[in-house]
Image (cartoon, rainbow over all chains, first blue to last red):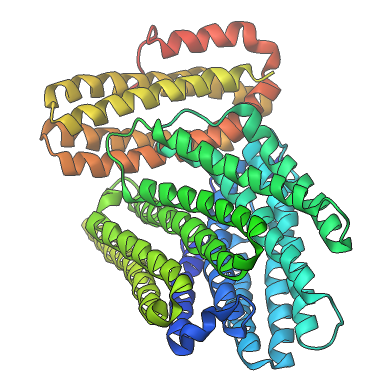
Length: 433
Length: 153
C-alpha cells in the first residue's frame, strides 16, 4: 500500500522525453539504410541490411517509445511508482541507444564484438527496466485488465530480449543454435507477446476514454492477455521442438490479433467525438494494417511459393503500418499533454499554461501523419517493385520521421519558451514583494 | 465488492456524455445550445467533485489515516480541472471555436487521466476500506451527485 501513497509523483519531463526524441532518429536511420543499400535490402528478410532495418524500427523506434511511455503511464494507470524514474530513464536510455546502434553495426559488419556489446547493452537496459517496473507493479493488486496486462507484458519483453541475446551470441559464432527457428520465436514474442499485449492493454483504456467510445466487452479485456500469453507459450514449445499442431496454434495467436484489431475498429466507429483527429486516423490505419498483416500471413500459409514477398508485406504492414502508426498517434497526445501539465504545475496557478493545441500546430500533425502514410504505401509498393521504389521509399521514411522529430522539437521549444515566461513572472512577483 | 468503483465510474461516463454534447453543439456552430450544454456539464462536474471532496475523501482519509496521500493529489487535480473549465467557459462566451477545441482537448486528457487514477487505484482502495459503510455512503454520494446538496464552489 505504501507504493500507492504518492501516485502524484509524475516522473520528470526529461524521463520519457529522452526516449521520444531519439526514437525518430532511428527511424530516419532505417530510411537512410534503405537509401544506402538500395533494392538489394528487400531481396529477402534475412539479408543483413533487412535485419538491421527491422531492428532500427523495432528496438530503435518502437521499444524506445514504449519504454518512455511506460515510465510515464505506470503511476497513472496502475498507481505503480517506480524507484527514481529520472535515473531509471537515463540508465535505460543510455543502454538502449548504443545497444540498438551496435546491433545494427553487428548485422552490417558481422563483427562478433558488436553483437556481444549489443546483447549486453540491450539485455542490461531491458532487464533493468523489467526489474524496476516489475517491482513497482508487483505490489499493486491486479484489480483490472489494464494492470494485469501491464504485468503480463513484462515477461514477454524478457523472453524477447533473452532470445535476442542468444541469437546475437549465435551470430557472433559463440553458440551453435537453430537460428531461423529461434528467430521466429523471438520475433513472435516481441511483436505479439510484448507489442500486442502492451498495445491492447493501453487500448482498453485510451480508446474508450479519449475517443469517447463504448468500452471493449469486459470478458474480452479480461481474458485477452492471459489467453494470448498461454497460446504463445504452447506455440513456442511446439515450434521449438517441431511437434505437430504448430500451424493451428499460430492460427489461434493470429486470430487473437484479428479480434483485437476488428474490435478496436468497431469500438472506434462508435466514437462520440465531434471531429476525427490525426491520432484517431493513425489508430484506424494501424488496425486496418494489422488486419491486412494477418490476412497476408494467412495467404502465406496457403500459397508457399509467394512466401518471401508475403513475409515482407506482413512485416511492413505490422511494423510501419500497425505499431508505428499507433505510436506516432500516441506521441501526438502524450507530448503536448505533458508539456501542458508540466507548465501548468510550474505556473502554480499564477501563469496559466496555453492549451495543448498550441504546443504542436494541428496542421503540422496532419501533414506529418500523411507523410507517414505515404512512406508506408511506398515501402509496401517497394516490396513488390524494389527496383523502382526502394529509393523513394527510403527517402519517404527519412522525411516522415524527420518531420516527426521536427514536430516533437517544436513542442520542446514551446515548453522552454513558456518556462522562461513563468520564471520572468515569478521573478517580477518576487521584486514586487 | 466494487460498488464504489462502479457507482463513481458510471458518473464519470455521464460527465463524458455531457462533454460530448457541448463539443457537438460547438461543431455545429450552435453557440447557444453549446452554452446550455456546457452549463449542464460544468454543474455535473462540480457535483461530482463535491461528492468526492465532502463525502468520499474525508471518509477514506479518516478510515486509512492517509491525509496526504492520493486524496490530496486528487483535490489538486480537481483544482486544475476547475481552471480548465473556466477557460473553456470563456472560449464559449467568446464563441471562439479554435480556443474551445484546444481547451476542451486539454480538459479531456486531464480529466481522463484523472479518472483512470481514480477508477484503477483510489476507488478500489475505497471499496476495500469502506465496504462496511456502503449503506449510508452510496445514498450520500447519490445525493451530492444529483446536486441536492449545496455546491462547494
